[in-house]
Image (tube, rainbow over all chains, first blue to last red; front, side, top):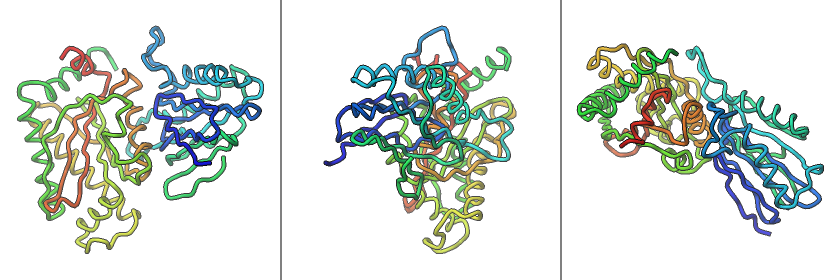
Length: 164
Length: 211
């Protein structure tokens, strides 16, 4: 079966139960991708979040999936709506690199680290454990989730895809 | 940062980017960039007139890259002093290698990878570009505005662009405000994006909303 690539852009959640679909978050830098997959029902989804949390907590942002803390619960809602069972979900996490580092920078915002830390906190508070992750470092990554098998892969620049 | 300082910065950014004299000021600053890069490379480098843009997050990639995984060299600097912001130069890997050969006086194709020497040459390009730009702004406004040391990043285009966007969007809505321009050499071999990004603690977003 030919792969049907579905790009998950920044601030997006994509869910699918179509076996041909491959959900792809291209070039995650400090961004993180969280995936949830139900191997029984072959339903999966991916969130591609830019920032840990909204700076202004009093208003709901236009695009909550831009934020890890708001996006993860939305991802769960979406995969459940598509028929996934909460108890069977496999949760994986990747991204959160430190891209903009230089000895000359006094103060970096460490958004990558904070995205990863927030994902851990939110998932833990929802009762999920992370089955696999590829986070941190200084390199961008492309993450893929194959809906047919639930397999996930990671690719960094100049490298082949490898299983997560 | 105190509210007063933020207000001062906002005022200065607006003066530079959106006042009646902006066209002249930014034109002079970019001309200085072109002159200094031409001197440095020994080639005629031209810089397009800069355009102030408001880019929605969903369109970030199409403004900055041909494909999200394209091998890209980004030179990233902070704007410091009386004015705060970020700057990014974006090169395709092939263009970056060609530029390194130009700087080193080598035949095109000599440099095959972005080794330490090549990276430091690219860092120097970043230094010269942003310093030439900011020096003119400093002179004309009387404020101290200086570049940080550069970071050279070699990675997928999407990774670099999103990391830069994240740094400003922490404070703002779903749009990125950039002063967008491009360098070209006379032979049009190299095309580089040069972005100047005001810090979004300022009220530049407001300017776009009311325009």
